[in-house]
Amino acid sequence: MASDKELKDVTDVQKITEIRYEQLNEEFRRFPGIFAYWAQLEAEARGKVLVAKALMEQTYARLATEHRGRADFHKIKITEAQVEEKVTQEAEYVKVKEGFNKATGDSLRISAVVSALEKKGDMLKQLGYVRSAELAHLDEGTLPAKK
View 1: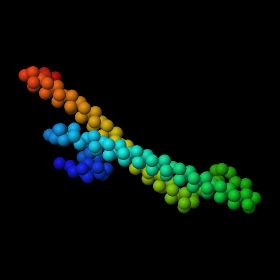
View 2: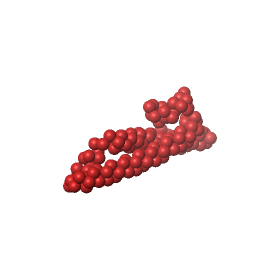
View 3: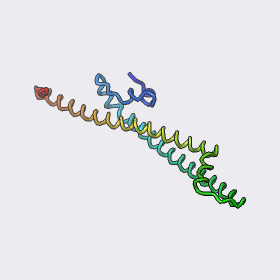
View 4: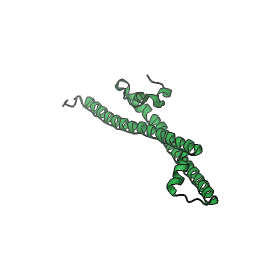
């Protein structure tokens, strides 16, 4: 059986999202906590994307202002395309852009896990319904017909 640590490790999504039919009661019991954990990670990841985006935009604005100021100081006409080209080649901007890209990728990966867990939740609901119906029929002494 997978440990809690294994079920919280994004590197093995299959363990997180699989339904172990032989341990269905355990699946019903553990699912809400696992889902809540990953939903929290997703929210944190989205927050990191917003912070990284704001930092990237602030860095861009500051560097663009610096480039325009230097051009004005030297009485050089500079277009927005030229400013953008210069800013996007600055090491500082490249670094914050990489941070934004990493945060975005992490957020997308975690969102995919949450989406898979939502589907697992739907399947567990259906299995719970089927199990309840089977138990109700056992109490009545009959089983539903197989289709």
